[in-house]
Image (cartoon, rainbow, N blue to C red; front, side):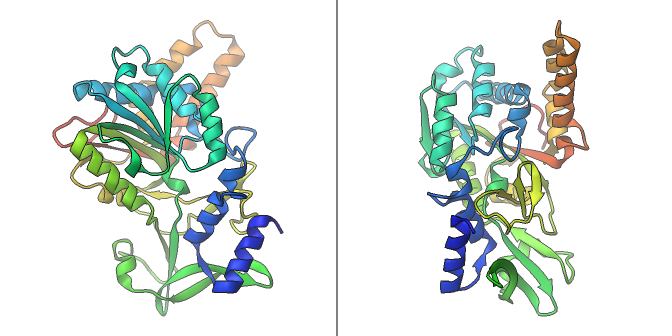
Length: 353
């Protein structure tokens, strides 16, 4: 039994079963032995690989997309922000791709939203030649236009789960059975808690809500409305989710989320309808797929240029990377994207109303 398991069992024995959201928060962010506090989980040597780790082209295209929208908004001084920046790879690629845009770097300050001290150290090394400020929340960002990106950020926010049975809707909790972590059903809950999620559901169905996403989207949209800017959010999920998407990944394989607390990544699919509804008084794009977005941003043309004069084996590697990012059977359809801009401002390239 590891440290996190001991902490969880002691807490449950003392106060009773806990919500899945509390379990995720403890396992991922415990300051001493949480998953993101004690290791670098990214890349082939970690537990999972994100799009920026697959190819630099991902970040380059998104960086140029943000830069074009900055030009469309009149080249203001702005905060360039990434939420959940991982190892800093995406931000590094964005900065490299945009350095030739006249005035872009001179007009920006760089901000990363991150709680893990381990990852802050890694990000600092990756971005050592830049002046970077770190924040724990969106609220502490400077009061000016914000050009914001979040890739695989919302999927790691804690969720709550609810299951419908003959008694009504009940929350799925985590307790202890035979000295092991196990799932339990709590008491019947008031319907207003999940009223927006239960249309066309049946007995046995599970729905999930991410309460932590709401204040983030509300604050982000408020700032974009007040000061200008743009937000691009990419993650795996869909518009209308029903079912259990709570999952754990360790060594690039899915495992039981209760088996190795603190030693595996915990995530859930993102409900893009909820994100869009939380963003008020701004223009929110239709949800698109990562594959379609990257195609519209010119991924094929970019890879063709990269392949020029390369040996065959390197060309094959590049083509494999591109396929992984955009093919419908890989990340292309699983990952979705939305964009936010102020009213009367054109959406970024690749997004539609």
